[in-house]
Image (tube, rainbow, N blue to C red; front, side):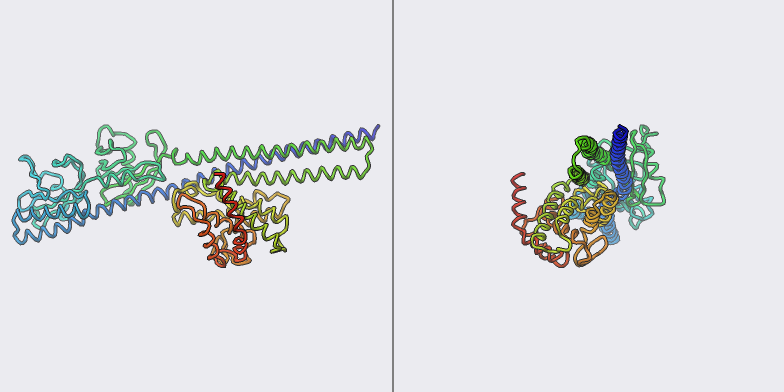
Length: 573
């Protein structure tokens, strides 16, 4: 009976080893998924902070430039009109002649340049003359008005008068004024705030935050909230000690540069503030709440956690089945021993168990790949159907090449299996690209496109890291090659390494044809879908430059199969 006891001890030892391997596999998988999610979130957070500053400064800069161009039109008009009026005065023009000229110019400017240019007026030869035909009341004293007093303080230079209440229209205007050659006469040009208000309302950072404009005295010239217009954040008593007063003080504390960027708390929430000076008189300001800025990242983190949990459940399921199968193998071995089965039968049974375990490991590996593809789909709103379509096109191409014995030194049954499994991960590197760039509703800027191009090299590295421990070296190599090189071009003008011709791995050349074709016939937020006929024409035109000419011939040969697949998709929709 001693030999039987030793046999039982050996079975128990094997069971403990299998249990240890089972627990270690689940623990390592959970740890890896946790690291991936944590690293991805941290990277997104840092990229978003960097991108937010660049995009915020660009947004404020664009609106400031637009406002500056508008104000320059006003100063140019005032300068030209002042020169003409000075000439007429030197020629001895009468008040009636000056008034007729100002009326004509006022009408011309409003019709031909901008409806916001409301009129020209001023103090000429000791008399008030208004180009709009307005007659001032008896108590109106031109020399006490801001347009006159501030022009006199300008020492002969053009002066942008602080916004004020116009007595003619009872609306807020600002003026551009200048003292004439005699030192007493002043010409002033009123400009409505409508266009400035429109500019202020459009200041946003990817749909987040709000903008406003203040003058050098702290007065709100324009604001996305109409109730805030006219307030003085620096001088109004109710603003003393307020967050907005502190914000304006911080903006004007920066005197060495025309733009500033800082973070502060506004109304109890952490915000980032961008500002840009205009005409050394006004400041364009954009305030963005960090909570709004990072809302998409937080949502994406939640989605990644859910997907990672689903992947872990799938892995745990297959590992558990494998563990149970091993326990069964031990049990069956004992029964075989007890019933004195032949050695051949025992070998066959063990071989079957090993084959089942191998198949389960392959299935588990394919499910991990599908899970990673799902991660990409969760981040990029255009990726889901694109992944399924490109996988189908790749399968069609490689099947045709296998059937026609093309590239027999590479393409066999295993090659077809591996490339179909690897194709869905060609854009895996996009998980490292910021949401603000990846899901931008429009064409990317050159800077943003440069960031987007890094996804191919990042994808190759990710595949090596994630599948690095896999026993299937061919799948690792092909997955990495497809992710890394699918944007290379046949003539060497692609990226990231500028490879040409046969230097580009065959799997990446096949992926490039499928990837570009699906992009051409698919609708995106920045373009409409292209017809199949037009897409094929472009592929054939780019054969020998962008694409491997041989693969374009293959894709033309399978056009009927491609069109049948697309019709099936239309029926499903």
